Length: 240
Picture 1 (cartoon, rainbow, N blue to C red):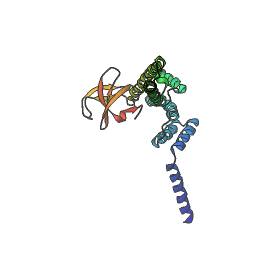
Picture 2: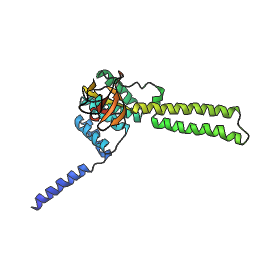
Picture 3: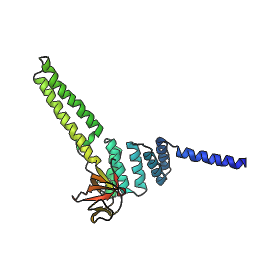
């Protein structure tokens, strides 16, 4: 009886330990599974890490690599884009994204713009810093009877930099509104209802632009310009 009780307690402890895994531990388990070529298990652990709040470019990059191995190109595309949204200078993600796009015949968003060299947060910091440089350079020197052409030149350059920062933030905001369709022939309907007429069917791996949300549906626009309401379960957003 005591032996049976010990076995039950040990089993309960193991179960509790598995439930109590942290996001970082799930991430490491995913890495171990990937190295062991158990790619399905790797994806499962990466999903658990994300569910526990881990939100890093490394997580999405590794999960994308695992999803390529499990034959999920659309979900892999979404994860590579998520990784780049966090770390735009992650060259490994850019290279793998290019390979995936070619091998799976997927159309990835164009990220050749210089605005994608910095992240959204970095552009925001640039905009804030240059705004204050512009404001202080233009306003403070005249109060002390100083300034002149040099001050106004610095203010003008800072203003241009501020404008570039705002454009960078806007560029990333537009990028974050994108989503990848993860269901073949996903219906895009005329209204946010499961029984509404279908405007078009989106192919798996298609990148669409989200613009509104209602219940279990989001309004999305396809590259051909047509819009429709698509179920949230039928796409993977680049950013929540």
